[in-house]
Amino acid sequence: MPILGAIADDVTGATDLAAMLVNNGARTVQLLGVPPPDAAPPEADAVVVSLKSRTAPVTRAVADSLAALDRLRAWGARAIHFKVCSTFDSTDEGNIGPVADALRAALRADIVPVCPAFPTNGRTVYQGHLFVGSALLNESGMENHPLTPMRDANLVRVLGRQTRARVGLVPFATVERGAEAVRAALASLANDGVAHAILDAVSDTQLLTLGEAIADSPLVVGGSGLALGLPAAWRRRGWLGEGGDAARLPRLAGRAAILAGSCSRATLAQVAQARGSCASFALDPLAHPHPATLAAAAIDWSERQPADATLLIYASSPPERVAAVQAALGRERAGEIVERAFAAIAEALIARGVRRLIVAGGETSGAVVSRLGLTRLVIGPTIDPGVPWTFAPERDLLLALKSGNFGSEDFFTKALAMLEEGA
Ligand code: ADP
Image: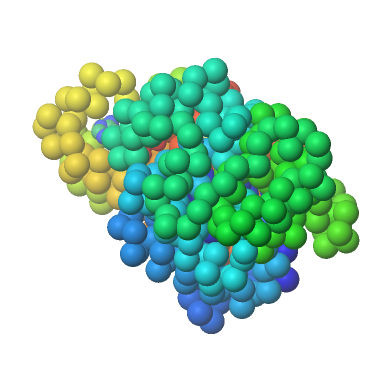
């Protein structure tokens, strides 16, 4: 029975939370989308359902979140974490307020602690104001976000515009006084009819305090930072074991391959670095402007490589090359051809014995996961912040999905070396 059921408003945020939980000793499974009603409960301490609800229409976001809640409750989750972005990405219409209201009503929670703080990543909350590094949220660049421009750093006001319910604050000074003081403040706000309370936190120590203070709440809203303190609090309650092996994944013999469909600067450098130690092949969408033939070129090549070579297949190209491909094929069509080719290549490589696979690129990862029909990932050790190794039981595959800009320059080689070391 999971202790925690999390509902995340996007996929990378879900992975981020899941990795944080594992790093703090909770065995965690990430589900890709709402599981069907008859799905068996995953064997884990925490289950994170990833939705695409951050910028979906409000009614859709609420419906999906309630459907996820339904499964998590049926599986016996003691507490629900609605995972939002650490920059509180939302608009006056939602979706954080409406989803939090709907979950609160379904769970009959009296007061909902809300805290997006993640000090390690520079997200702190002071007097209800969210900072990104040393800048207020509305001066951090987030005010120009194309979908969720954040023009107010005061989260009490921001959330207040998204809900009819009352929003309050548990300030820094109270959090400094410890978990008991936070619990008392929450009870007193609840007594005054407040439904959602923004919690200040500027340090990991304060997140540990908050973990203890809110571990018994049926619903919490926040970023992955909250998962810093919750597992320790569950352990104190005897709900969670020592968790020494929370990140352990099965060891799989088989080939390793890297598929890079991201053209971001970080991935370009990672590809250049890995070419030194891998058998590598560049996809050429201009020579083969069709997914099947583009994939076939790479698959033919892979069959001629030594059995012990790590295969690196990449479409990653510098901006001028991408621009030329887009000019010839159209931006969307070029993207789709390359994504579909990678999905077909992943399928073919697995059929040919690949058991360790790294995919670089958010959209590219989405295309691969969907082609492989994956619905759940068991979360393993973290390679670089936000990117863990995972195990996909449905295909008996170790999989690392890296969003384009993540990871150090030696990400690919480091990731594969971790598995050799038996991580
Ligand atoms: P990131 O995480 O860096 O944004 P994505 O995989 O989300 O990476 O997006 C990269 C997009 O660029 C994908 O649609 C991919 O198919 C496309 N792409 C990759 N290589 C090329 C290329 N050489 N020419 C044109 N488009 C490409």
